[in-house]
Length: 106
Image (tube, rainbow, N blue to C red):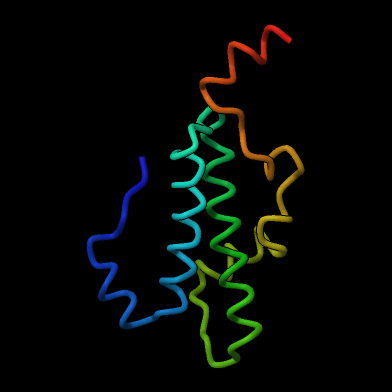
């Protein structure tokens, strides 16, 4: 399940770049769930966090005035290259539920 912050509009007014990064991470997770790629929950969350870190990292390089919070700095340290910081199998979208029976037959 994906949760959207109740105060998203307020966050966007206060810090639009960080909110955009959050939405990018959320969109990554929604894409996986929406396409039925739910076999490995951990990968869905990792891809979302790495996407969030990628947008934050890019924004901090493009906009020198953009200040990162300590938790955002830790996230960028964990995923310094964004989505490409993940191992190849974590970057790949998982198979969806309809593909599992056919996967095991092959």
